[in-house]
Length: 290
Image (cartoon, rainbow, N blue to C red; front, side, top):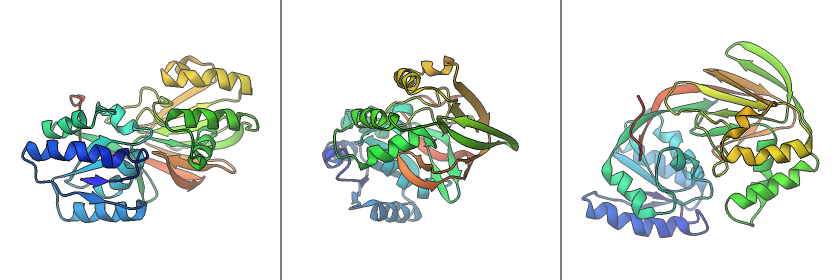
């Protein structure tokens, strides 16, 4: 059990204290690992996977899942999740209760294994969504904010960035087809949501072997602000500025944009993202899709 004690401002430690006895009562041998920072958490995950543990249960948010994924991809170790972060988008898609650590531990106990895809850019894997436009700029600002907690932090960052953001020129290589376009935002989804339920790549499946590339053509600030709430229920897919592609590989280039994936800062564009099918074993609260 890999714990980020500070996840959710202390929720990680609280959730671990609830989940661990449930796992022990079910007959599991549990060893708790606590990473004081990202680098230590990544190293602890690597050591656990190399030791051949059956399941690595992460207690934290999407950031901790992301760190563990770097070692778990292509391994025989299964990922379990006890959500204790801000966004918890990985848990949301996998049907894992996000506000009940004991219920999340029950998903681990049930042992329903699902094999899913991941995405890779350079040496880095991600599970949910890479943001590379207005959404990335919002993420950059939100990560600098210490208040408020949860989704409201992203909402306030969105309003702040709307004052100055303009559409950017992008070059997209979509499975070898080049597209030059101006856009407000570009996202590359392995899963459907980021930022605590913003369903930017609505319809993306974690097991179809494809990436979902979504872009929004230029719009006014007022139009963007009105469209933003539609990301929470996926109805933005009918917006006239919306465009969607499914590909196996995409290269995204634009000036001045730092990309994020799973809420973690990756680096400046251009970046090439490749779908990696069936690369991760996860414990899911849903039946595996066929």
